[in-house]
Image (tube, rainbow, N blue to C red; front, side):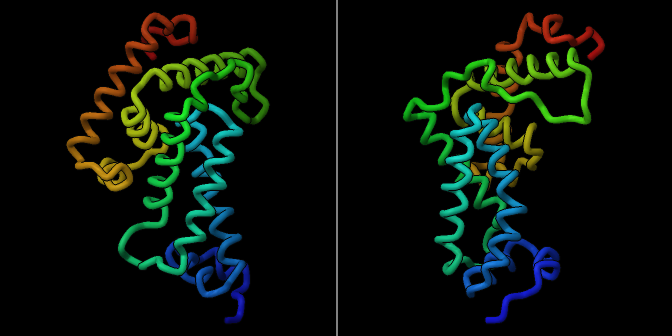
Length: 198
């Protein structure tokens, strides 16, 4: 098979790229990796709270995607849904083995921005650390549902497919997770720089 030009590949959807990769087009893998790796890494980092662990999970998840490429059936599932599910499972496995639970405050990277003021960066880092610590207090499935819904921005039916649950179960997990986060963050509003009208 003749490799397609890179610009043409970037116009294709994930399913088509995976099929092209399975048929021997290495450019399709480069486009998919460029497109999906940051999203997988972000999800893994939010679930694990550790950049190195998230990098390992990202690599594992993408390797699994390349391995299943020859058997991929277009239209049965979205590549992103499958990948979110694999990422969540890999992260959960690592958490169960006891990795990623202890997060040092200085190990949490400051968010990259257009040169915010130092005090704003410190405030944002404190908020991120508080959120990460609060997420770590939630049971695995609640944390996964909350991250997918409120941080990754997925719809409940997509989360249900990723977690292999019904939509009502997802809604319940999210509601319980939000209550757990509220309890974990109680009393920190002023410290984190939120006003009463925030």
